[in-house]
Length: 224
Image: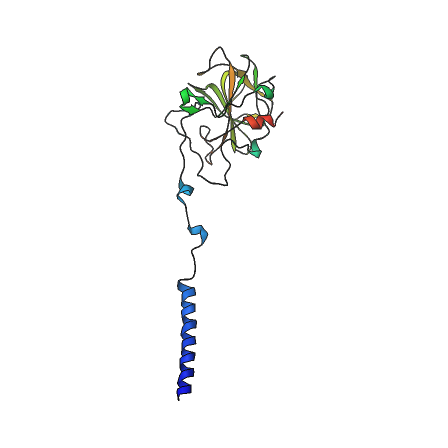
């Protein structure tokens, strides 16, 4: 009788152990999938300061959400490079990288490059694309916004003296086509005419006045 009781207890113990293991796997052993974990950074957007080319001082641009795998501002995007020198007759080797220079006494960053040239020098399209907006602002003066064919990047030309004859919004332009002439409109020094040239990575809405600044200097270096 004692031996039978021993085997009954042993079998019952094994059965209970198996049931407990099954219950743990079904109820407590599974960990939540990685997709269920969301960091605060994934949903955060960092506002930028007003740009010289903004249609209104009340309009702020937004950087994309923080993402270690996303391109950084200033990183050369392959879809936008290489770019043609936008001022006719200027050697790219003579152009300084002023993308990170401070403006307004350190209140904002340039986020563009200045290409010095005599007033009236032809300004050329850096790539194929579409004239998205012809705009006049207090800072940028006479300006052009050109979208490249994929709608990923915008090219910004500012402080122009004049537009090329017949230039209009919606017009398709080719790399090297004249868009206007160098000047000192807006807040540029009349004694130092130049082209203020910038590149922006557009937001999904593709609004001409918003985008993430990209340093154009290395892109022009690739277009030698």
